Image (cartoon, rainbow, N blue to C red; front, side, top):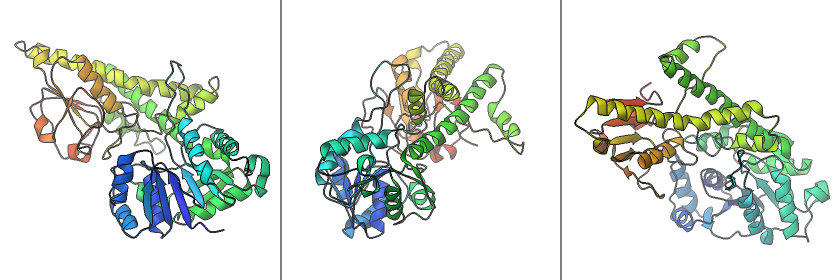
Length: 418
């Protein structure tokens, strides 16, 4: 059974590039999002996120009539759900995953499902989320059969296929990377492979849904543990008056050592979030993963303390000034270099906290964002407008910063000019 029409639910950093890749292969694609601005922008052939080369692909797909965006799902042959999976807003010491977006997406597509359709959950999810999605769909459409009851003979096929791409390289990696395909049955897996082979050149590796969910969580938890080691090392080196960048460079000369670079924390909707999905399911067993999360979550506060010391040192060196006279510039707000993604960004959190604590002027420089759509108590300025800042905090190594040489009181958290 071929896939003539594909629907992508959620047109964010993963959903929109995925929709664009299908459309670039001359498939009719219906993108669905609750954000009217995103829908209108895409239907003009433009994009609302920063991702290299994506603008040209979307423009061509919309112009040629292969891609359109809507607020409400329409009938299709395959549905890919790529919505957020944040945390619940509670006081738990171990954050609990919030599957409400997946539930709402499931309930939204349920009325337009028909026999033979394929539903794929792409959202990074805790183990068991795909099965839960199948239950929500079954409850909404009792007239159809689903894999949990109908097996390979079910009316609807369901699979989990996590994205495995790097922001800033999404277009290339969507095509080249291997994909993990976790069907709820063997037929579900086979149909998912058929769909992704529309554009995926990498290998589609088949497993079950639970293992596919855990694979993505494992990949990002591994990275989180590695980053925690680097971040902890940077704190230790600061206390022992050792240049951590030089130390890591020397240690990495060992043929079997590859220490990552420390930073102000860990951000993004993957590495900063996914390990908690494992911890929340198995809190007694996930000791190293839990510790890594605590180390990385604590790093921004360590940065804030360094900023407080920098202010004190500046005032001691300039006794005629008060704290109100001190201008602090925060360089970078995104969670990683050369993108506009603010999700779980430690840099953004640090800038907001500095602005709350400091009685003087606080400014921020983020080359990838023209206008902040969130409430902050600092000003967004151009790079040249921050030259006279008294304290400069480098939080993200954007390419624009690498081309600069900062003078004065500089607190470099990322080794920006490496």
